[in-house]
Length: 457
Figure 1: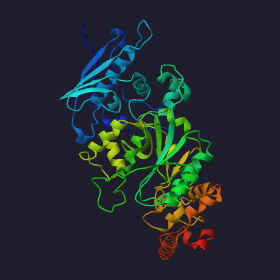
Figure 2 (figure 1 turned 45 degrees about the horizontal axis):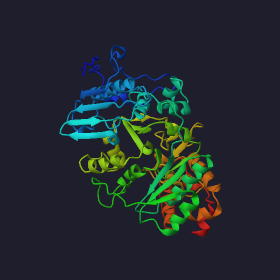
Figure 3 (figure 1 turned 180 degrees about the vertical axis):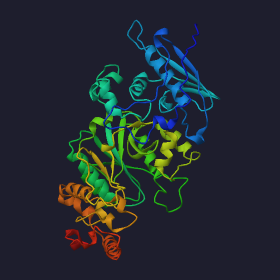
Figure 4 (figure 1 turned 90 degrees about the vertical axis):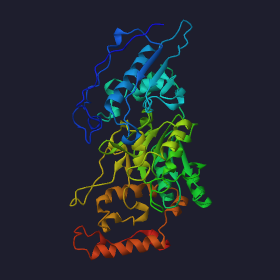
């Protein structure tokens, strides 16, 4: 046995995690990432085992350590470059050994590939095709994933073929959403399914529902296109009792959909405007930036895995969410993620107080309806205009786009988006408040309401 020491320059200590995950990247110029030095790979013969000591600063910090990422990427590159077939064409096994209390980054080295964990030692037999795909991604969200793939001259199909050793495979993939604890989003889930179908998607549609969703609603959701899977909801351990996010760790159940190689989770307050199927090519976790180095968990690419689910269930007890909900938790346990363009999860949000048009960009592929949802408003205008605390989410253009999907629904689905007396009373109350508030110059409250749903409330 021959032991070889691999040499590489440590990443510049001035490079911080925020440099890898900047707030904004230039849409008009090619985005660049900080330099992440790698070994001179041509100096090394193929290896059978790669051993590395991994730096660790603890779970509490979210493991956002640039040098730790560099070490993991060095190991990943050495493994991929050592991947080779024997005389009979069979891939020779390669192993990675990590020493350190935190182990490797599970964003790169999956728990599915773990052979042994004893003390501070972790032994993996990694699936190189998945690691190879990870190495095609930028070193952070300092670059958009799609332009990066195009820059290395790979289309979606070509990227998948490369990541699978040039063997064409048809992965089983699905769009997924979750309903739990309340039926308030049944209409949203129905419109989401209809929007995906209207985009001519070829993927499965799967909806996870707990016992709080009635049989009648389940019938409507099936009719809309969803395959229904029953789940037990999961409480968010760091949320307050009866808070809006008390049970939204139920989203973790998506990792249990092991019959799928990859799923795109979408919150049920989004609608798809243009087909998203091509984005399934990107690995876990690919998402749109939310704030700073954090991603928005309302739309994300996930690779189901039972061991990942079990690990998340354990981590949820010790890793605190910054907002008490799933987004804060997932950002803590998946600090290394891949940036997708904002157009596939366009947040309906504006800081421009005096912009009353608030058009949605023409290239938007999916709209995320923050604030009061369209089915909770009159179709005549976005009722977020009527409340001071929600006016930042108001957009009549986005509201009209949602109702266009509603109009294309089969008639029998529209009953699930009816206007209840309670919803109508709330809208009227806020219209009256807006009328008496002199700081609402847009005067949406003056608009004549013609929403026919009022007549069947």
